Length: 357
Length: 253
Image (cartoon, rainbow over all chains, first blue to last red):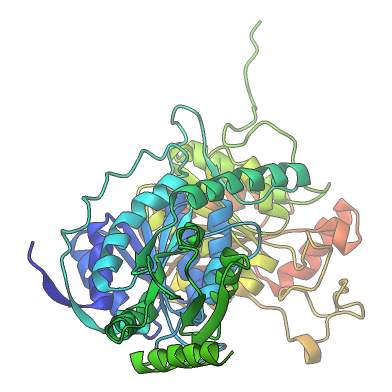
C-alpha cells in the first residue's frame, strides 16, 4: 500500500484496528481526542466494541474486564488521564492481563497544559500505580514507527500478559505525516487464552478466575517473583534503540520521541560544522536501553541528555552511564518545544567550557 | 431403600466453608444467586464480578468464571466483560461501601448506559470488612467506629437511597429492594433475582436487586437481634418494593 497523509492520532487509531484491537474504552482528553473520535466510527463499522466511559477510571476498569474476558483491548488518554488510570493499570499488571495504552503526553503537574511534553517519563517507567510491576513502554519518534509499534503491541501484550504503553507527545498526535499502514509485519492471530474468564466454565480445566489479591505474604512474594521473571525477560529481549553517528562522537545526545527528532537536525548541523556529535535514541523507555551505553566507544567525552521535561530520563542515563562519561542536561518543559538552535548553542557552550578548563 | 433427595447443596456454589461471620446474610444471598444461575441454565456462561469488602472473595464460592474488581469499579469491569462477550451472564456482587460510596460514578453510569448486567447490591448500612465505619447508607443516629456519637445529619448528611436514585435513570430496566430476614422474604428475594437475570438475558437493560442485610459483628448485636434490627430500623427507611420494571408496560419510565 502506498503512503497516505494522516493525522497522528487518526493513524494510531487505524493502526490499532489493523493490529486486531477488539474493543476500545476511553474518555475525552486533549490532545488525543481524534483517537476515540476515529474509533467511534470505524470500530462500530467493523462490528467491534467502542465505549465512551464516564471517566478514565471507569475506562481502564472496562479494559480490565474485557482483557480478562480474553479480548484485545485498547485505551488512550493523556498525562492527567493516565494518572487516573494508574489504579486499573496496577490491577491489570497484577492480574497478568494484556492490553495496550496510548499516552499522548502533555505538560504537568496537575492540569498543566495541553502542549507537547515528556513529563510522564517517571509516571510511565517508575511504576505509576502501586506494587512491583512494570509496563513495556515504547516512545517512538515519528508516525511510521508509532504505527508499526502499535500494530505489534497487541501481540507483545499477549505474549507477556502485561500492559504495553505507547507514549508519544502532543506533537506526534497532532501533526500530519505520510504513513504506510502495510509496512508493519502482518498481525498475528491472538493466541488461545485458556485463562480467560469469559463465561465458559464448562471448559476443560474448569472455571477461570481473574484476581490480583494474595493475602498470604509468601504467596504474594511468589507471585511478584513470577512477574519479575517476565520483566527480566523484557530487559533481556526488548531493549530497543537507535545509535546515530556514535562511532566517532565526542558528545553523544540521549533523546527520545519528538525531542530525538529535533536533536537529529542538531546532529546534522553540528556535523556539517565539523563538531563530532552523535545520539542514542531510546525506542523503549522501559526497559531502558542500557545496552546502547555499553556500545559507546571509550573516545566519547560526554553525554548530553535532551528532554521535554526537567530531567526525568536523565536519572536513568546517569545509572546506565555508571560514572563512565561526563554528563550534561538540557531540557524545556511545560509544553515548550525547543528549536534545534537551542541544542546547538548548548553544545557550543559545553565545548567552550571544556576548552577553557 | 426408598431414599428421596429433598434437598441438596446447589452446584452453583463451590463446596467449601464461607468465611462470613455468624449471622451475616451473605451466605443466604450467595445461595439464592447460585440457585437461580443453576435453575436458569446460566451457571456455565456466568461471570461473577467480585468487589472490595467482605465479599471480595465471593469468587471463591460462586462456581463459575469470575473477575475480582477494584473498589467500586465492579460495574465498569462488568461492562468490559459483557461488551466483548455479549452472550455471557455477567453479575456484580457489591456491598454498600463499595457501591454506594466509592463506586457511585460506576453504578450510575452502568445504569445510564443501560448495560445488560445484573447487580447484586448488599446493603447492611456499614463498612464490614474494614471494621464497622460509617457508610453513606448508615442510618441517622447509628453508632459506627467513625460516627461514635451516632450519625449526625448536619455533619454527614442523610442515608443515601440508591435504588430510588437509580430509578430516575432511563437505562435502568429492573430495580427491586428485597430482604432476607424471614423465609417468606427469602422466597420473594429469589424471585427478584430470577427477574433480574431474565431482564439481562433478554437484553432489556440494567438490572439491580438491593438486599437489606445485617452485620452482627459491627452492629454489636447477636444474629437474632440484628435480624430484628434490620426489620425494625432499615426497612422503614429502605422500603421493600419494585422501583422500576421496564418489562411492565405501565411502569416504562
